[in-house]
Image (cartoon, rainbow, N blue to C red; front, top):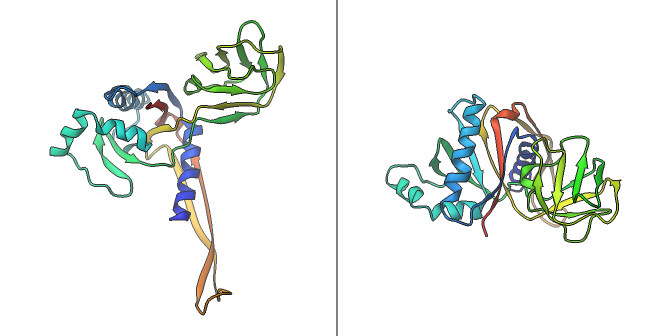
Amino acid sequence: FGLRDAADKFAASRMAMGAGADLGLVDATTVKNVYDLVLVPASVKLDEANVPEEDRWIVLPPAVYGKLQLDDRWINLGASGERTLTNGFVGQAAGFRIYKSNNAPTTDRAITSSITVATTAKTLTSATAVFKQSDVGSTVAGTNVDTGAVIVTVSVDGKVATMDKNGTAAAAQTDTVLSNGRKLVIAGSSLAHSYAEQISQVEAYRPEKRFADALKGLHVFGSKVVRPEALVVSAVKTA
């Protein structure tokens, strides 16, 4: 279980970082918003990218799945849809096989690229696209950033984020940290991601404190997003 869990978290983080589409921050405090603002828009994004409808899946954190369970449209699927919990699988909707997992990464992250802080325009500016729509609502920490500053908007190109407070000094910095504690929903297709693993260097040994035989080995794994357009992420607010 531990080996599987570590590998699953690694693959999830790779998919989250490599996703080609971002729905931004979704407010799912209202019960029906998970279906209307997450599942359906994610399906539309994949349709627009010409991703095949077969083998589509979506991974929901438990809090987001909990909101979906309160939607009467999801409850009514129980009469005809598959609802057996197997390896995280909890049902189907909007063209997705739906999985529940604690391993979806949070939207908290550190940015080491050079970012210029403005003292009058309340902006953080980067030469490259380092900001995401899901960063909206995140608390910002870093040199020349006022304590408790929150991102309120992100430009379409991802190069400018606007805060609710002015910077304390106009200068470039590379220690920006964004935090909000939200977890990402990840939707995609089996075409999007490649994963490989192997248990290598397996050998038998005698445990020091037991009269027993044991085996040990090295679990090696790797993954890569090969089709970013086949992945969609969204940060979902549930409370």
